[in-house]
Image 1: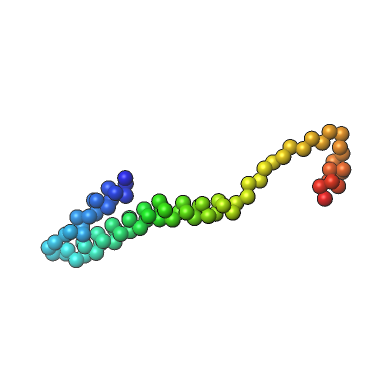
Image 2: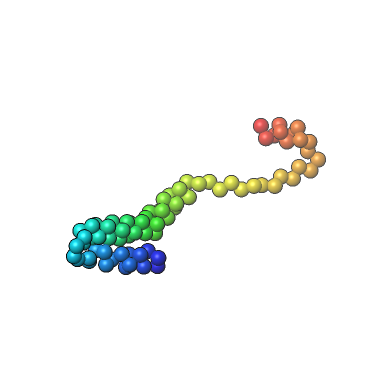
Length: 80
């Protein structure tokens, strides 16, 4: 909604006529185009990259080990 309001608010700069209209038109085009491209990246590109990165991410699950009467040295020997 904020982007849409910004684009609509700057749209009159694109339609400006009269003295200095060339400068206003170019500024308006840059503002509107930049906001549209920024919104497209935010809505489509960033989530797509996140999905690609999240696919390769491994989930590490902690497992509780019941040691019972086992000594710490024995556990270290088993682990290695």
